[in-house]
Image 1: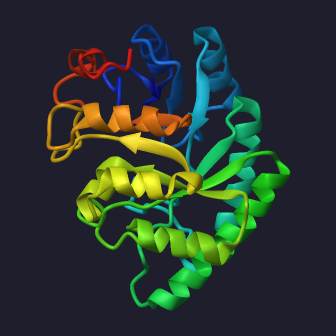
Image 2 (image 1 turned 120 degrees about the vertical axis):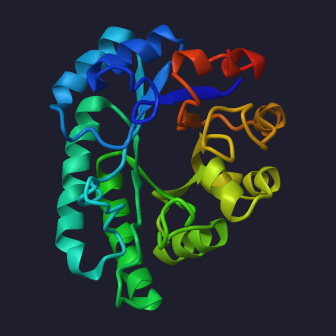
Length: 260
């Protein structure tokens, strides 16, 4: 049975962020993830985790001005020092919260920057972060995101991700496989996961189109979950979807898909 983590940046948004931990636990989730913890004191979040018996599964490295439209800075040649400072900040939070992995968002390729320069910057930043995080006992993962939702996002398919991971050459860097994003960019979900299972450290889900809960679109999550059990995937799966109506009203997929 899959280990599901509620993504609190998308689920339970009917209540304030710190109240979403209570809601997730009440709904039966054992783990949580979200985009960023940095607007709150780490100790505040840790208290909510402990009170609800929740595992802190994942959050992202600082990703620039999110509200201003930035989606990561790891491929930005002029933001390297900011990126490095963000690694330190993420480590400080992870140590308090107890999560053992953080995700790096490559960001949108900057205007006027050639692919080769953006890639070189991204690879160098991943090398730096992987080493710093390894010293702290934390795994680094990197996520490919579709270019329909985020036009120009630098890391956007499995082949590219594997090539970059190879160039980084760190045993502390793995791939975050988001089923929704990769269904849009390349499809072939089950064979791709099976072929690359050794390098996949985290999976996220949503149906397509709409990025709603499983059962609302074209993806056969009954087969996907059965396949993940069959091949022995024992990592977390982040429920990173936008509820079609309210979070609570849409949670029936957990039972109909046999994951609770």
